[in-house]
Length: 344
Image (cartoon, rainbow, N blue to C red; front, top):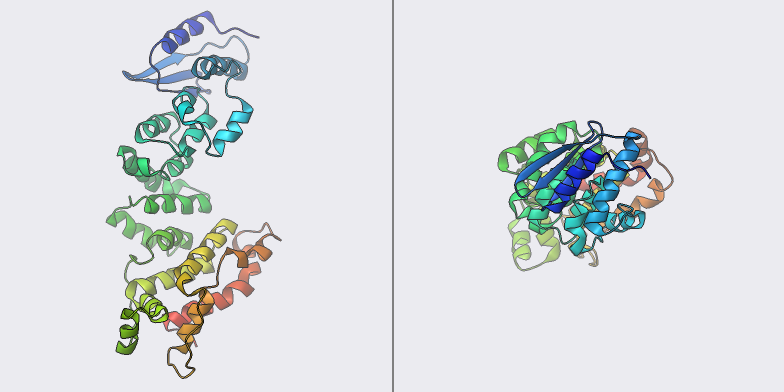
């Protein structure tokens, strides 16, 4: 085993003797950065062997001090913490290891609080970590919530993976941290990138930019007010926000980028109509709204399960995937158009 350079060992041990909040290592520049109550400290490393091996030795020293694990960050612990099962008592220690994977584990931990989120963000400010941390109420409601949301929106144009871009929008809207101006801009951009709509459909189904509503006859309004589930949901669909929901869902169905978007979109769509899932449509074939009633009944049965037999047989994404999905999507889009008043 190669020892650390004397100068590095001395400076690291002095650092570890004080209060330490988090560590990150710039392996390219061979610099260790430390977050302490007094601010940031910087230690230049002087490898006396291969740089990657030297960094491993540094992490072994950090791990031994933080967790009593002379081997650094154990492989079994990596798997366990990545699943969000990090021991709450170990979260502070995980941030002192200089291991990006350990920071990710902290970001996933159910017991993450705002202060630990601040330290984790200093250690690994990536879009992935921001998305994970916005999944926690304590972070969304704390000082870090807006910091993370602003970062995700600011860096959205640089996110090349459409699924991760979709997830960034979902995280920000789900956290309730998208302001009116940013919301309007994203909604407009979604016309060119329909997967952006999915976060809106998931978290704001009844608070979307208003479209042109359809008029519900007074008799059906009365039935909706009296608690009739079919009339109530039809009223929801015909309202301006309901028409926006349906139009956005149609656009998203026409261009889902990958499997994950398909599964999520189908579940969101089925969830919108789920109040009708176990109900028999009302009788009365002469009802002028029979087409809409049948469309709602069909859409209430939509879920990701409908796409599983198709998508488990192909790894295709983009246009080729969409061609495989046409037999499933065409009738769904037809039902949506009926509710939009543009169907047969």
